[in-house]
Image 1 (cartoon, protein in one colour):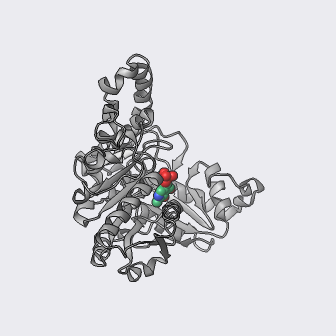
Image 2 (image 1 turned 90 degrees about the vertical axis):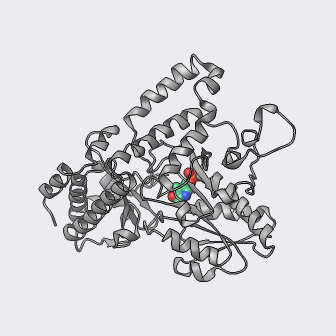
Image 3 (image 1 turned 90 degrees about the horizontal axis):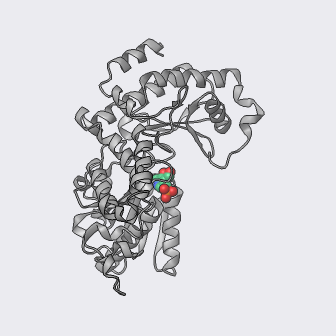
Amino acid sequence: MQPRSHFEALDAADPLAGLRQQFSLPPGVIYLDGNSLGVLPTRTAARIAGVVSHEWGEGLIRSWNSAGWIDLAARIGDKIATLIGAGPGEVVAADSTSVNLFKVLAAALRIARENDAQRTEIVSELGNFPTDLYIAQGLADLTGGAVTLKMVEREDILKTLSPRTAVLMLTHVNYKTGAMWDMPAVTQAAHDAGALMLWDLAHSAGAVPVDLRAAGADFAVGCGYKYLNGGPGAPAFVWAHAQHVERFWQPLSGWLGHAAPFAFTPDYQPATGIARYVCGTPPVLSMAALECGVDTVLAAEPLGGLAALRAKSMTLTDAFVAQVEARCAGMGLTLASPRDATLRGSQICFAHANAYEVMQALIARGVIGDFRAPDILRFGFTPLYTQHADVFDAVEHLHAVLSTGEWRDARYAKRNAVT
Ligand SMILES: Cc1ncc(COP(=O)(O)O)c(C=O)c1O
């Protein structure tokens, strides 16, 4: 257990500490939920105001050209590409993660089928984020049973791969435990089994270094509103390996993914490359906010970029585990994340029998994390704005909530729609 002065000294010596100035953090809040919704960047409000009053208000329809609205998907995609080991022109910002999963799963299944007709199975982890599994189920249903989804326990994933596997679909960092797959090794195992590899980077992009090209992955999707700080419901992103670039199919063949949208021809002709993964008109206000969010992560580049952010994240999460286990020993908490920082993303989860109530009591005190059923207290650490002193202060609040039984107050048992 360390005194607050220990954490204050770490903050004083932290070369990334200044990056926090990029954010509008409400006073009195210790925010440990950037893995659900990133904090508002200070630049976003002015940018949105400018887009509304100048680009929309004055530029009107002209702004599609003059303000570059039509280029937003590719421009933001190129910025995100630098964070995930993809090349320029390989990523677009578009739609939601769920919708992008549908597109790339459909594409992967088609490529696999063309290569080998017996490869009709999607393999995934039972503990994957539900939307990944639901989208795969919906797609399987659409094929009338020709495609199936096989969901297995995490430890059984690799031995489940077979000559029937078309695509292995995994989330790089698990939403509930923070456990992180070894991307190059798992991708290699999928390829050795003749399957394609699809990664969901929702909890990775902007949080941990990712090198999709080096890993040889085939497809990836990810989220704009978590560690990319793009705002509630921000557009997501999608990547396909350049080797598939002329083969991947876009099942949601909307007009803005057409080779020549303003030719208005009746037949669909996909645009070259990743541009075909745009479907319809992008939400310009949300795109502008996403770009501001991505820029907050890119601002770490001169300070060592994701490698430096990752090092700070590992220090923060290690310190949190050590402090909780020392200060709150015997209070019913069990670590639910890998103890080894290299095996987890940027979050720490503890199981507790009354996790929901405990989290509500913490939130009432201004320590914001979240709850994942049935018993997980989830704390996200975003080194762009999380301070070392936040670790100490959050644990002091957790200790107070548990040691006094504060969480037993009836108001903390009321279940909200979003937990
Ligand atoms: C792994 C993963 N995929 C996808 C999503 C969400 O997808 P969408 O933005 O389409 O709601 C989440 C949300 O937390 C997630 O954790």
